[in-house]
Length: 414
Image 1 (cartoon, rainbow, N blue to C red):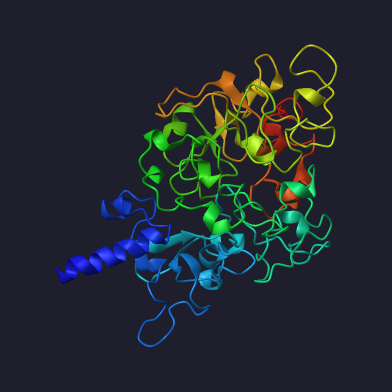
Image 2 (cartoon, rainbow, N blue to C red):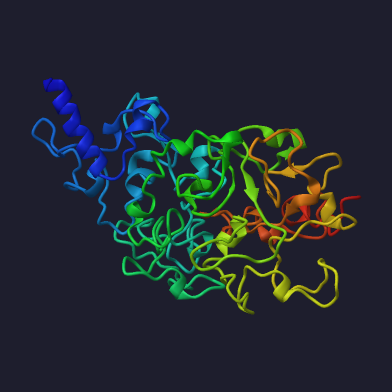
């Protein structure tokens, strides 16, 4: 009876913390697996010492300072990671592996997740040792614990957008989550409250073909509320600069499948729109889809050139969420006969099935994405690009970078 009473007390505390889905933990259905003590401490005291050296924290968190500029970094930017991607929070515990967001490509031999790395992003206008403010999103606390690493050129105003798209009572600088961030519910200011349930929900593992429906934070692509798609099992970590895939390869569990749309610009400053396009999500800040204004980067039909064809030129902004039509150079993407997809330059699909069968993704549904060219976090290249834009020259004999889509713009016959 005593044991049962203790368990009921612990259960009550865990539920009241708002983070732990007990059914998921008890039946091994939770997205996060392993000991609860990896992330939580009941009293922040063990053997006469504080478990969390930063003091007792909300949600019973056992590491990091939730009052810091960006609390997510307590687990996802560990000082002892030494540039590696996966780090164990607890030594010798394989269930405590946590992805890091500041990967040093010199340490990982060029390997990186699909989102990229913040390692090369600083507040500096001029490049120093391969780093500058041009290399990625300038996230609070990424360069130091007190924030302060606002973009040297842009401040907190995202290019193509306005400051109010990230403004809240919590923070004006970009954070990982919350009203000023990307992950979680952007209607909620507190970063941890905004991702509530995202780490623990059974939805993280109980879905068909890795599919995310965008209905909740937990069931959205990478906890980006409203975004649909299929997720890679290990964040697509690797060096994919020369990987050209067949259609059948996309049914595996190591490839992200991005949701696009063929219905034009969608979304608002707080939601990507009904189709769940990842482009609509980027557009929440980078020139919101609301009004599709002249200054917006996420632009399609409102800024296309003259003519009746969807592919009419000239464009004022590079289009996104536009189908790569037949009888155009783009139909030959990725530029190698018989191949279907480039991991260096990924495209999205207007139609994605939940099951992930071999032939469920069609050439006629391929669309251009923001992340076709950019890394979501950052990269070693300016503008968080996936390749060095300065090396894109018409004299090239290899169809990398821009030429994966613009297959008629380089000297491939040389």
